Length: 235
Length: 235
DNA sequence: GGCGCTATTTATAACAC
DNA sequence: TGTGTTATAAATAGCGC
Image 1 (tube, protein in one colour):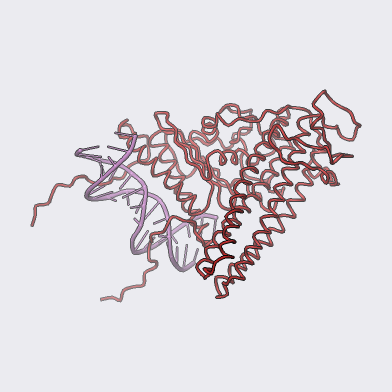
Image 2 (cartoon, each protein chain N blue to C red):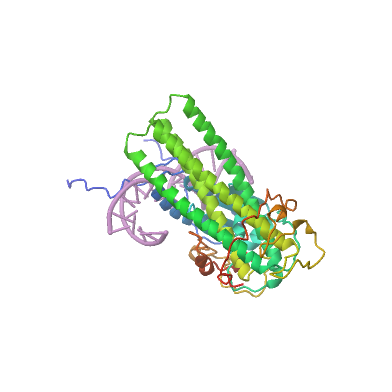
């Protein structure tokens, strides 16, 4: 028997989720976990076709971001989430509306591009379908997937529109989407959801807007009743 | 020897990172991985004191977010380059806006219904496709047409929204032909974008806001045709 | 849509380059 | 900070309730 060779490492050990004191170890962990986090985000977006925006600032100030389809559109979409009613700020109403509308157009434009691409691809598919004999089960199924995704894209567009519409409506009802000035805290709105994580965290109740606006069937009632705290959008 | 008891599950299996076809499995995976992702994000922010912003839109349109210290500051810090079109802050014509919105809502509602039907039919098609051997050329082509029409419907929706948006825009940007008054002109605003939806409208030169932010062709011809209860929006 | 269970697959803490 | 290795902690796919 060969002598038990020395372990090169003790392997992974359990750690507490709290700020890592050792600065060096901290940056190492940051690097590794950052990669892992982005990977997870990417996987989720692919597996479920979800739109994701992720921004990470390293302790040293460097910024990393991930976005699907792209970070900006995600952020734009996020900012467009329905502002909850019960916020007063008539002064910003118009400007807010303008901002909202600008974003709406932006979103539409982008969706339009995506649609254009899909359309093209769809035609190509159709064409190749016309001109070839490879219309066997396999290919057909493939087309179905393409189209399914396409359909989902479109449904997303619809949802976006509904969302935006709702936003305009609630804007109409009172609130405003203030300008995107700084990370300042707006006015004395209820800070119900002032979710902070500070230095120790309880993953269970952390900054997780869990049941955000869901405007289906363009039911305006839902918009009003949406559980979003709204202050997180700095109105 | 006891007989090998039945495994309650085969345990985890490796999966490819690609859109999960089965809608049900997809949403299950989404839920699980979403939680995992947020947890990882929270851990990273705590372990390394990093600022993190994470936004996830579920395939069904729900939004979830996580932020440390808070999503707003992260976004604010990150999006200092996203310019906002600067529009004036005029008095707005709420009545006109209400009309537009009502119209918009109406359109969305209808489109929504149509889409719902399409969706249902799409599923039926998919189902029969899965379960039968008739996945032949004909059927595939049918799907294509279905979706093509579907897409056009949506593009129309989009255009409608653009139109409406433009209307609101001009309302916003200028002389909000105050309510039912007369051809009054609040201030010396550019009359180019003059437009109104209230009592009478001139479809030809209306709501053409084509500079501030490339709004395609606008035709408000049918915008004002809506009666709207005017109070369902509590203006 | 969430919760629990189990068998595996992944992610990684600790170390070394 | 990026890489690579090892042993172990976590996450999670497939299923059931």
